[in-house]
Length: 258
Image (cartoon, rainbow, N blue to C red; front, side, top):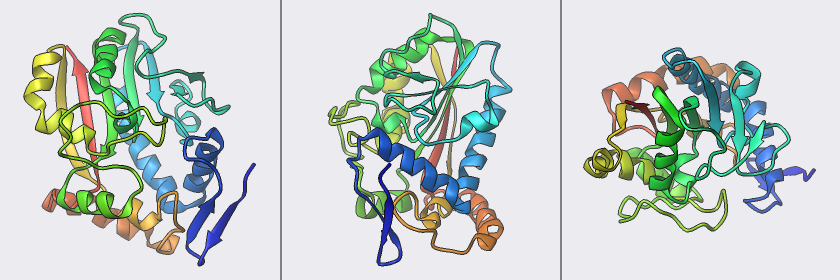
């Protein structure tokens, strides 16, 4: 296992290619080692649980589980990734899910949709695999004024709100991305989405979390504030987007199959 070193006392130096499975494992170790990222993921997993409570009986799968730890909290969920990771239950592409038609009750994702090479093909798979009443819940980058500024200036992944297509180059499972894709598909091109996928309904889109991930340092930097400040920062992080939606970094998108 490659070691993580720190440059200038702040930045993690990971000497692994972005698409290497070992890098995703290291990202998982970083996420769980810092209170800000660990508890933010727990917050998102709580959202997953609320969604699962509204779903019909059936298999529940998380796509792009990567270095997450959903399995520890909800062992009934099938964890998966396109990368071969020992911590996950299955390895497959979201464009060709190995499930029977109408066998899934829930599809869960964190920062995964914007890495999928063909959004339309993926949504077709969701329609095929989900039971009536089944849900898709995703946490994704937000194309808010604040989020766009951060992602376009301080994040390594492309963030292109002006992209005309719902596809991205298949450079690699992690290196191929457009962080603005969720906004493009479900907000900018909502009429096209509703026309092309009449069996999927948008339950809600919520802008959220302007501060926690940023101040956590993500998977590239050390946590920027001491852990004891987390409750106060989390309180501000929860209320700020309700008052100023433009001040957010993530969006919660929920779909239901009719």
